[in-house]
Length: 276
Image (tube, rainbow, N blue to C red):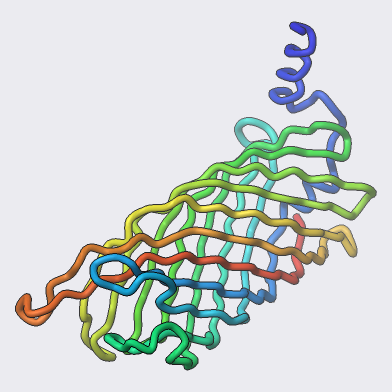
């Protein structure tokens, strides 16, 4: 048992236990641009502060956009140091289903479309461990920011940051082809909403608390040449916004609040990159 334990520790913490994963390292060191399509699945729930129980409203649609990413895997500090910066922007229209405020008709009595803009940044830092000559495992720390400009009513803007830990296993079955997966669990923070009264005035601003965030993904990278790579992948993100505190409006005559919600994003990516 002691020998087995020593072997596991050696594999995890030695950067030179096995041969170099050349194809994986090349795939992890490139700058690229991607076409992306994100499926939005947003649900708001009542049952608190006088709001009717159950589903209040939903927004669903697939909206398109682009992504820019830069990743590097080199021997800087620990060996096989991994850095990645990712930016994405989607813009389109979503399908809204809800109800009028104060109406007894309930969910589904109002159907419309609204504009939507999604902007995301994230940064990863990790270290790659060479499990064999064609398998690499990279634990990483990720910090990111999400913003959703929601076009309902006069407009609403949701923002949050998050911090999480993840792991990225990669496998190269043959030269030039790299299969990657990733899984992250973390926590949102600085979640906030701005609700507009009209195009130029803010109705209220409120905090939406924190929640657990989950992200998983998978991708395929193929090197068409020494420098030109093509890729296809999918990412899935799941998190919540908490209910806000009531905000006094109109000289405290009445109050407004943001209900709790669940958000799921499913993103398909197709891209081209330059490896260095």
